[in-house]
Every structure is written in structure tokens, then in C-alpha cells.
Amino acid sequence: MKDLAKIPATVITGFLGAGKTTLIRSLLENAGGRRLALVINEFGDVGVDGEILKGCGVEGCSDDDVLELANGCICCTVADDFLPTIQKLIDRPDPPDHIIIETSGLALPKPLVKAFGWPDVRNRVTVDGVVAVVDGPAVEAGVFTSSLDAVQAQRQADPALDHESPLEELFEEQLSCADLVVVNKRDLLDEDGYRKVLETTHGYLRKGVPAVAATQGHLDPRVLLGLGAGAEDDLDSRPSHHDGDDDHDHDDFESFVVELGECESPQALLDLVTPLSARFGVLRVKGFAAIAGKEMRLVVQGVGPRFQHYFDRDWREAEPRTTRLVIIGETGLDESAIRNALAREQAAA
Ligand SMILES: Nc1nc2c(ncn2[C@@H]2O[C@H](COP(=O)(O)OP(=O)(O)OP(=O)(O)O)[C@@H](O)[C@H]2O)c(=O)[nH]1
Image (cartoon, rainbow, N blue to C red):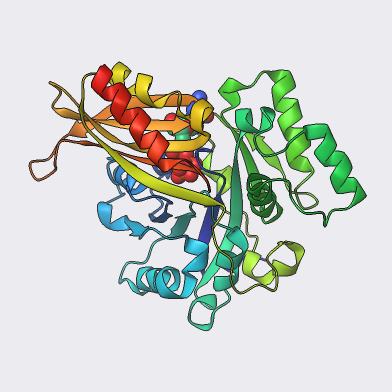
């Protein structure tokens, strides 16, 4: 039951690059006067998501309403970072109407939901819902599941079987905690692909959890907010492979930052970074680039082999005009080979 005395909080989960920040941005644009506070946590040392949301320019959303939690996974720093941040928000003289929490793509949502049961917070905030954003084309391509059919069969046979990959485990953790699933990037799926994604996704959901499709995370806020789940009181129905562990780590993934100085053109930069997923298994690339002769900063976003870029704002005086990209992949990513390849090819261009 929804408790009207408490501030609702929505946890947005979903794997790296699924479209969480994009969805939140769309939500801000359609907030309809609701005062939203955002708590953002991302993996990797370049704070891209917070910058994008701070620069949203949406009326009623000031930079003070966007709180970034330092690098480190939100689900592992609950007591040190997350709870004090929530506490500060609710102690404000003008507390927000709704708190939106974007977890890093590698975070487990359940420990976070559990944190809302802590004494100082539980009387004042409730988890209105856990929204899992799914990268439709990545699911269709089998990124999280070795074979869609095989996984269904395997899960029916024994749901407790170990996962074939850390990606699948995260996918399962995030979906099985969800109150709503958003199958994002619908524009990149045909009917058949969308149906496949729904089938795969449903295999991981709790009973009755709905899935909706979105492009650029665009949904009516009434679909996303006001779910009234009270998830902190309903933990038992949300299975996790880490139930019982107080500790879990992110040894399965790693990230590093590359600096490339100024690049000749957006295309020259894309030529450098687009092959990284096929050559080195890079999962996610994001950051800001300086382009020769351009006053504006280029935002660069890569999910697997798919890249997008746009100029967002002028470089500020104090900012070094340089290109800084965070590179994320599974553990074992060959950092020095990637650095060498980038340096060699940039020099040759
Ligand atoms: N074609 C297409 N691209 C999308 C859509 N939604 C998001 N993207 C793109 O996907 C990339 C990743 O989007 P983000 O919103 O940054 O994803 P995220 O889940 O916040 O990423 P992390 O914080 O790194 O986990 C960006 O280049 C987006 O522009 C969509 O519906 N369709």
C-alpha cells in the first residue's frame, strides 16, 4: 500500500548502456511540475551521466537536485555514501516530491532496496518501484544469454544453476528485483525481435511484473512513477544470488580511462573507438572529446559496436581541452593492448 506520508523513491536499474540516463532525462522533461531529485551513480572515472543530467536545462531541475555518488558501486557503499545522501535530501527545508536513483549498470538493486529499511530512512521514504531498463537489441543479440532457447530450458530444469556469464547474472539480478521493465531501444527492434526480447525477459521476472516498450526512454511519467510497490517491505519476493552475502564485489568487470588529446574530427574519433568491442570485447565507452577547431565539447557514447555523439556545450575556461573516455569491459580486458592500439592508430591518422 502506498504511504502518502513518505517520499517515494524510484530505483532505476539496468545494464551498462541500456538507456537509464536517457530515460531519466525524458522523465525530467515531462515531470509536469513535480520536483524530482536525482541520485546518480556510475561505474568509471568520468562523470558523464551526472554532467548530462545537470546540463538538461529543464525548468525546475537545478544542479542542486542532481547528486552524484563517487565512483564505486552504489550497492556496495550503501552505508557510507548512499544513506547519508538520501538523509541529506529528506532533511532539506524543501524536500523533493520524488527521488530517482540511477544505479550503475553493474549494481545489484536489492541491497539498495534493503537500505530503505534502515531506521532513519524507513519512516520517511518508501521505494515506489524498481524499474529495470533493458537494452532491447542487446538482449535480442544474446549478449546476456548464450542462447535464448537454451537458457529457458536450463532455467526450467534448475533455476539455481550457476550462470554462464557475469552479464547474465546481473541481468537476472536486475530483472528479478523489478516492479516494471522498460524494453528500451524499441526503434532498433522489429516485431519479431521485440517479441523475442519479451519472451527472454519474462523468464527472469517475478509473476505479474509488466514490461513496456520505449524509444529513448520516452514514457508517460504516470507509467514509471506512482507504482506504490513499497519494495523495502517486499524483499522476500525478490530473489538474489547474493541473499545472505553481506559482501559482493565487482571483480567481474573493470574500467580505465584513456586520454587522447584533441581529435581531428568526430569521424576520426569514431574510427578509433568503434572497433574496440569487436577487437577487445569492450562493452561500454563514454566520455567527452575535444575536436580540433571546435569550441564545443563532444559527448561520445558507445554501447558495444553502436556509437552516438553530439556537441553539448562550450568548453569552460578552466577545463583542459582533451579527450577523456572511460572504457569498460569484463575483467581481463587487455588495457595495454587497447591503449597501444588507440595511440598507434591516432598517430597514423
Ligand atoms: N537507438 C537508440 N539509442 C538509445 C535509446 N536509448 C538510449 N540510447 C543510446 O544508448 C546509449 C546509452 O544510453 P544511456 O542512457 O547513457 O545508458 P545508461 O544505461 O545510462 O548507461 P550507463 O550509465 O553507462 O550504464 C546512448 O548513446 C543513448 O543515446 C533508444 O531508445 N534508441
